[in-house]
Length: 264
Image 1 (cartoon, rainbow, N blue to C red):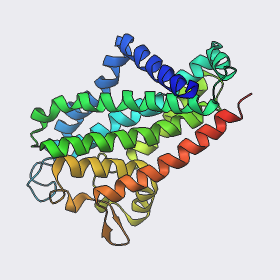
Image 2 (cartoon, rainbow, N blue to C red):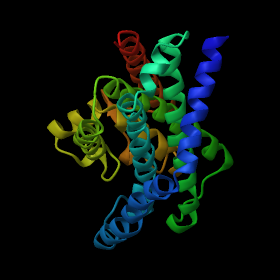
Image 3 (cartoon, rainbow, N blue to C red):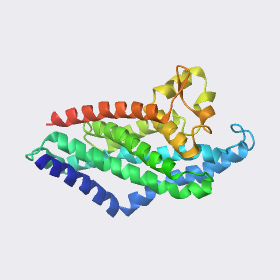
Image 4 (tube, one colour):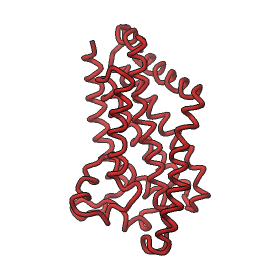
C-alpha cells in the first residue's frame, strides 16, 4: 500500500510542477508549431503536386511526425526532474524512505508519460489547419499510441537520468540523442524513398514505429500505405507497431527500475 501511495505522490508531484511551470508548458509547443507552419508550408510549397500520389499534401504527411516530435521531446526531457532532484538532495530523501525504489521509477515514468501524452493531445487543435479528417475511433487510437510511445521513451529518459549527475550533462546527452531519434525516423520524410542503408537504420529506431502508428491512426491505413514501414516485405500495422514499442518500453522500464535499485 505504501508503494502505491508513493507512485501516486511522485506522479502527482511531477504533474503539479509541470502545470505550475507555464514557460515550459508554452515553450514545449512553440518548436512543433514552427515546424508545422513554417517548415511544413515551405517544403509543402516546393513539393506541390509532387508529393505522394497527389491525394495528400506535405503538411498532412508531416503532422503525425510533429505529434511524435512533441511526445518524444516531452518524454525524453522528463528525466530532467530526476537530475534536478538529485542535485538538490530531494532524490536522496526519497530513496532512503521506507518504500520500494521501483515505486520511484514507476512514479516518474507515469508522470512523464502523462505529461508527454497531454502535450500530444494539445497538438490536436491543429487538425483543422492541416486539413485531415480523423474519426472518433482514430482519435482514441491515436491517444493510445501516444501513451505507449510516451511510456517507452520516458523509460529511456529515466534510465539515462538515473546515471547522470548534473543537469548540464543530461541536457547535452538528450540533445545528442533526441535529434538522431527524430531525424532517423519517418517523421519528416517517407521511409520507403530512402537508400537501403539508411532505411535499415530507420527500421532499427524504435521511434519510427511510434510515428508510423500515429500516421496510420490520423491519416488512415490506405492513405499511408505508400509511406509505411515494411519489415521483410510486410507492411507494419498499428498493432505490430505497438508491440515493438511495448517491447522496447518494457526493456527500458526494467533497466530503469534496476538502475534505481542500485543507486547509492
